[in-house]
Length: 143
Image (cartoon, rainbow, N blue to C red):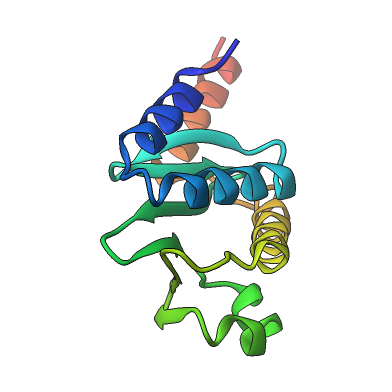
């Protein structure tokens, strides 16, 4: 059974112009293939994938399909391959009607997932949760 996020992404693609729907489905499949454990959702009214934090977004626009953010190591690792699609500091644009470089998309997503995994265990708790945990520990010590 599909999750609420999966249903929302399906609805997003179904509501997009017919000409762009195949590109969106292809991009969705590539992302899910590269990061099978990522949770599919909508955020900022766009399909979004969460895996140990924010992984990747994509969205349909008038003349292109965008993919964001391209901000980590993947930007340097695949700079030459990404160059034709980089539209801004952290944005890839795939023109409507042209093939999406699926192998490149998968490499980018895998690298971002790897970075997110590496950051996850060492993530320091927020000040609020650290304070809450400290209070719990203090209560346990009081007799």
